[in-house]
Length: 286
Ligand SMILES: Cc1cc2nc3c(=O)[nH]c(=O)nc-3n(C[C@H](O)[C@H](O)[C@H](O)COP(=O)(O)O)c2cc1C
Image 1: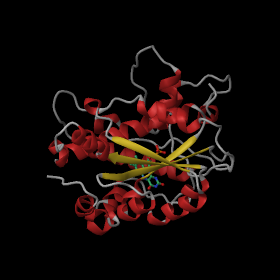
Image 2 (image 1 turned 45 degrees about the horizontal axis):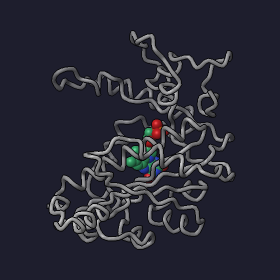
Image 3 (image 1 turned 120 degrees about the horizontal axis):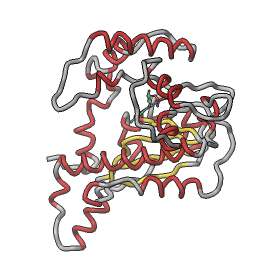
Image 4 (image 1 turned 90 degrees about the vertical axis):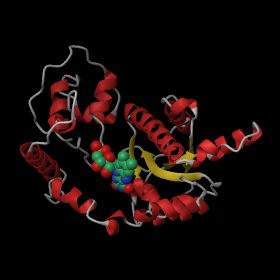
């Protein structure tokens, strides 16, 4: 296994032990009975962590094309392929885009910044060429399809990135000032940047760790929705504090942080205006 991430987590004999990966993902929770099958794909998925510090090195020629092939291999609603991506490498453009996100210095540090778009403009044009108005694109449903397609495509690229020993970080801050982003990237109507993705070689001097996730009992229900047990949230707060301690971050846990993140409209950092902004960018959103 060549991934840098996996090398960091590998046991001494070079084998990535799935119990170690499981416990990193769930903060030392007991490992349930699992199927005996195990492979490198699962190792890459369970080892994922975002990287926000990069080496200055350029990416090998063809990396963008390889990542886009991985992205285009994702499933897509009705094969509509209602997304596009813009590869940004120009440092000045990256700096302007970072400015629209309210910071995110990792956009500047990364040699490559991929901006993922909901793209209904191509479909509108195709409908016109076939003699109809493409009325179906006017509805919220079509915007949602574009957002789902863009997310699936980008996440396939992230898995490819992780498998290559590269690092990445999504940038939702692309939605803070979507009209400025649209002007910068010369987007046509009915396209919008839904998130960015920084890509580069992780800086080995900055240790990253797998960030624990909620216990499965809080997210996995069988047959019908269940109840969320307070002890699951408490144990996750503890797991996050252990992660934060390792990363030398303030020990805030999780529940108090996310409660603040969704507290009110102001907490959305301008994104509470998104519906009106999307309409101005040409999405009817009926
Ligand atoms: C759609 C999306 C938007 C995100 N936006 C940002 C961002 O603007 N800045 C940032 O540093 N991280 C951002 N992230 C990264 C998340 O904070 C990160 O994935 C999460 O904390 C889990 O950590 P992990 O990826 O290391 O497991 C974003 C992630 C997603 C999926």
